[in-house]
Image 1 (cartoon, rainbow over the protein chains, first blue to last red):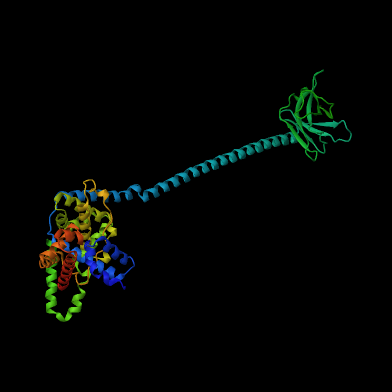
Image 2: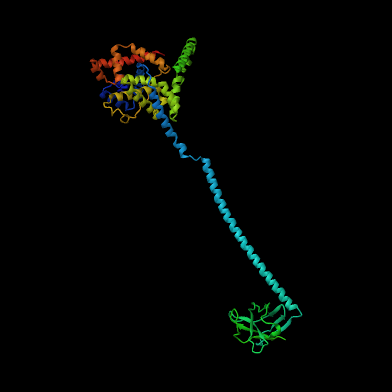
Length: 264
Length: 221
């Protein structure tokens, strides 16, 4: 601080603002070097100069001044504090409630859709089970009916002999009220998609064969065919015949009978 | 003021205590720290509340200091209406820029005096009415005013009385030179020209007068 001495007498005048520009510039340049002692002296000189304010007697400003100031200050304080609540007019707990409600609604909608799908699937399964049951019951009824036809002594046994000596015969039993049952074993399957069709040959002279049901033996050549409602009465039927026909059967025989049996 | 009366009573009580128990002087002096002055503590607290935009704190600061500030500004400007504008500007500066007041480094009132004087002298120096508008003025606030160790315990009223007494004890030339510098913002050269005295003489008057004021305030403790 070798230059401090030349500034020592300037501190009060500097704080007072009375230094001429050149002196002030020199002192400020020195203060700019970071001289702590001179900086402290200047601060104390500023305090000393500030005490000169007490030379002037106190005076009372108008009430209007305070009114204007307070009005401005209140408005600015309000403007500063206002954005905070306005930013969150809806409190956090309400946002949380809305979010919870939204999630609950979404879950409810998803759950309702899931339940509807489950109900639909259950209905489908129930319908399938019912249908399966009906089919089984129908098959059971048919099986019972076929069994009754086969076992009833009143049924008439008809042997349908094959035109091919290598093929086994097909047996038929006809109950006048319950229908006809045809059974066969080791029956060779027709070629391709062709089927075996039953025909009733009427006693009426010149009468055309009456078409009945068609069938395909299983892989072992077995089959049981029930004709619950024969298209002709037993008394009016001369014989039963089986031909090979296209899939779905034919209205008139298209091939010669492979099995034929007379109705006694 | 009621606050002053209370503080005077407390100060006198301390002085009586000092007279009775002179052997406890170090402990007594410890009470004269900046935080021991209730006025300083109150001002510091109020200014800190301004940072939270506390309108009540601002109103208390205005009620406590507006008369002294207005008296100073009227003395500089010699015009009540313009002085009120400057006082309004000073307090709005305080309200808007309270964060710039570094309370740990210096007392509040001398800093506020400095701010008010600077604003008043700025206004005095401006020529035209349009230039006098606020938007043309700087927003810069004065630096911190550090009180010396010897002067931290006087209340406002006692300090004012002391300063006036000390200034009244100066020679008329000294007092006039200091007043021209302080209230009119004149430089040494301008004062010398106004008083038609040599520049060196004016510098001596001002420096010696201020040193005498300093010594007088120092002797108060």
